[in-house]
Image (cartoon, rainbow, N blue to C red; front, side, top):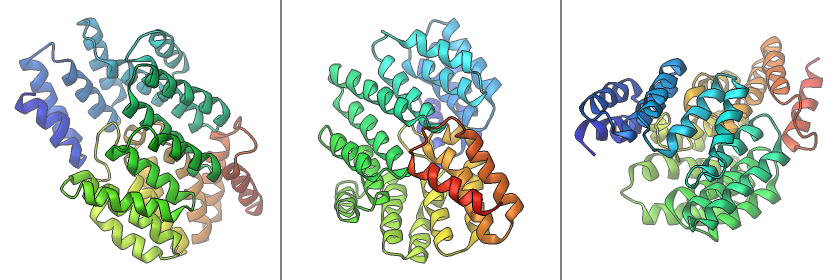
Length: 347
């Protein structure tokens, strides 16, 4: 990769500097018009900045040049999701079917979107399809990542047993850095501190010089473990190291998870205003979070933060945002039951 492409795709996104990434990606494409990765980087940086129309134009230019890069199709699907373009999403998903190298990734993206609005049963089926397709293509690491993301989803929604089952499935396929992190997070969030700590310690040992592991993954996992020990102040302290990196790019970064955990710590400490800042940060960066489960959960958590602060009007509004997003959600999801009960008490 040439210097401008390196800066655009790796260096600047690692620090969440998407404006600089855009500048460098444009230069990379100008110098090499058929540099397909350059178009992906430019589009994703525009999405991160919330410039969906510009991102859409970039992807269209790439398709017009007949560039073959699976991420371009995923990018177009995600842009359609962020713009609320249901027909566009369905079109991209349909075009990906039967397309090796794209279909599994698209199925995974569809699973994320389904879960984002609480359609968990459908999300499980789509997620399993993605993992099965990856296994059939002998892409064990990719299949493990899909299983790990499914574990995270179950953990956030309060389904501890399915979260642990999916975590086990992921570890049975791979022990990669990103798999271990997602699994350790899901296990920790589901209350299995012992295995989560084992994985966190292993990550620390194996990736002691890896920037993302040292400054984001490991502090975040230790913070989750601190929350399980009822040490929210310790969790906040641990997460200081992640602040410069929590907006960082990368398809497997699970961006803004440190902010979510920090918000949880403030909630436990009954510091509603501080918690609200963290959850609002997630809602203000939809182009970074995309369809991660924390994007939906942040509405609920913001409601909880406002309730703690005594701002009942804002709390009701935030709860309503979540319940509207999940109006057709599967009714038996634990977090949904909790949200409805909490909202009722605010009336």
